[in-house]
Amino acid sequence: MTHEELSNFLLLDPEINEYDREKLFDSINANHKRMFELGVSYDFGKGDFPKDMSLAISYYTIATNAGNLDAAFNLAINYENGVDGMLQKNQLKAIELYTKAANGGHVNAMFNLAMCYEDSKNDIPKAIELYTKAANLGDADSQCCLARYFINDFYNKDVSKAIELYTKAAESDNSTAQFELAQLYYGGYGAEKNIEKAIELCTKSAELGNQNAQNCLAYCYENGIGVDINMEKACKLYMKTNNVQSLYTFAQRYEIGNMVKKDIKKAKELYATTLKLGNSFAQFDLDRINFSANNNKRKLSDLEKK
Image (cartoon, rainbow, N blue to C red; front, side):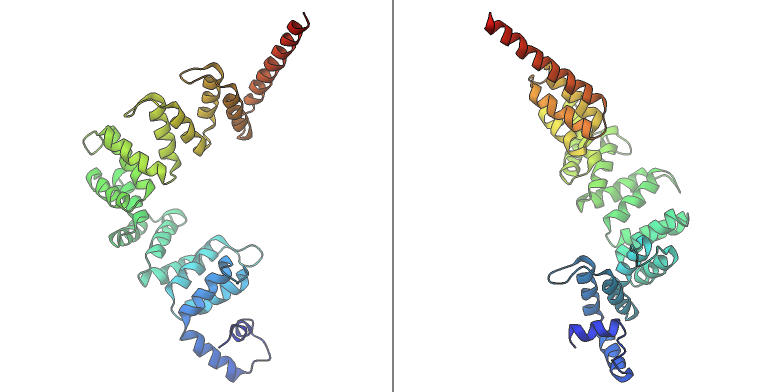
């Protein structure tokens, strides 16, 4: 069956007779994995396929009806978020599709369905049930969400269980789990206080791009908490998170040489960065530095004339 024949079928081309259409339908049902793959290709514009959400949704729908769980999951995402000008948001349809995939053992569908029950339906017990199933199947995000409930005492508070879940997720390189676990070790909450372990976990999380961890680690380097003071590392980490207040502080540090080598150029760069991030006060600082620089040039020029 050619790609053109499949497309014609999906678009219900009137030139295809009912007998041929039925044969195509049977063939598609027998090849739902290929239908899903075509859906993904059109969904994300993979390879030589143009991005075409209309065809993507059509392929996903046919593959879903044929029992493909991955297609049901992707179709659910589209119903949950909507597709501009093509598919309206439909939470109930999304939940129906997530449920179909979750009942078939699709772990990511279990997690998304748990979030739906948690957020839109406000059914926490059902969400926890789904998080637990997915967590037992090794899903790190579900392990994190489940740990949060043990920390926050939704049922019986069990910090040791939370640490166990966070540890499993952290071992799967889940940056959220690594950061949350770092905080527990730092504060000695449910575990023996261990600053070295906290810094190690926070560093791993920061390296994976977790902005909370990056800010926390930057603060540690800035203030010498568990590590030697390193202003350069602190500034670089704050830059990654676009932490306006901290970057503004570092701009001031570089301008006057407070705990760093005085560097007006660096100060101006940081002031400019915070200005782009919405710090209007930085414009005054830039104007002040530029005025001072121009004033100094005029003074030098006057001296040369004398």
